[in-house]
Structures are given as C-alpha cells and as structure tokens.
Image (cartoon, one colour):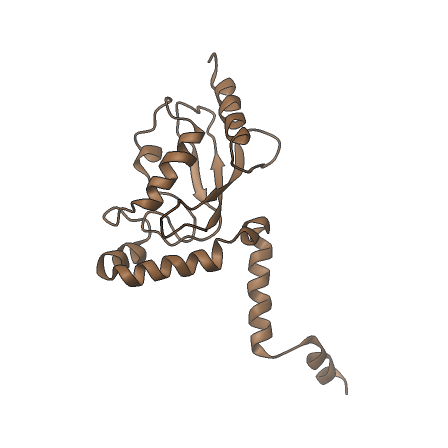
Length: 184
C-alpha cells in the first residue's frame, strides 16, 4: 500500500464485493452507508440497520466514524445520534484493521456483548442491569419498529413524515373537515 487513498479504495471495494450493500454518499469514497444485519442468536437477529461510515483523510491510520442511522436500543449506542461507543474504533484502532473487520467482527461483538458499565445510552444500560427481561423486550420492540428492511430503504425524512401521518390519522381530522369548516 503506497498511500492511504489506495488503501481506502481497496477497503471500500472489499466491502462492496462482500455480502454488504454499500450506498455511496456524494461522489467520493469518504462517506457511505452500509446495510448491517443483526447477528444470529442475538436479541438483534432479524434487524437491519443502515450504518453511516465516514472515513477521515488519514484512514487507515485514523479510525472510521461509525453510526447507526435508524434507531437501536443498546447501552453503547447513543439513541439520538447513533454514535457508537466501541474501544476498538474510538481508542485502539490500528491500520491492521479494515472496514470488513468493523462489520464482520466489531459491530457483531458490540451487539452480542453490550457493556453497560461504559454507556452512551444511560437508560438502556440502567435497564439492562436492573431488569434484563424488560431490557430484552425493549431491544426486540426497537428491532420491530425501527430495524426493518423497509425502514432503511426510505430516507430519514420519509420515516419522520410517516410518523406524522400516523399521528394525523389518530387525531381523526382530515383536510375535508377543515375545508368544510372554512366555508361560510
């Protein structure tokens, strides 16, 4: 490898040629989304997440930035931003690792073995330590609600608008009713 850009290109190509669906953002190799499936025999099995990856200019010497786009309930993932708290990515990254390691080893390990003592989501960590059964149920509810194949094929904006549509229907109002009341 003569340069970081060649290595970046090779790692992205390896990821694209594997079983992962990779969606490039803009025209460069610095930002992309990867379709990630929850590991087998875990609470997350059957879930599908869109993972946002940003590669710094100094990649592979500097770690990629990894985040969940759709929601996941996990002690080491910030629920709002999707940021991941994972030592191997945040602190002990090495150029020996590549993007396939992230998706085949690091993220599955994170989902299989959450660490509630180093949380980004304090509620999830607390619930996991206090009531494991309720925690497990909440993880499964999030998978059902937010981690479906359809959820990641829509843009985030479409997901938010569908949530608004549901609340409009629940209120029982319609555009016809409003138009009818406006007429004298």
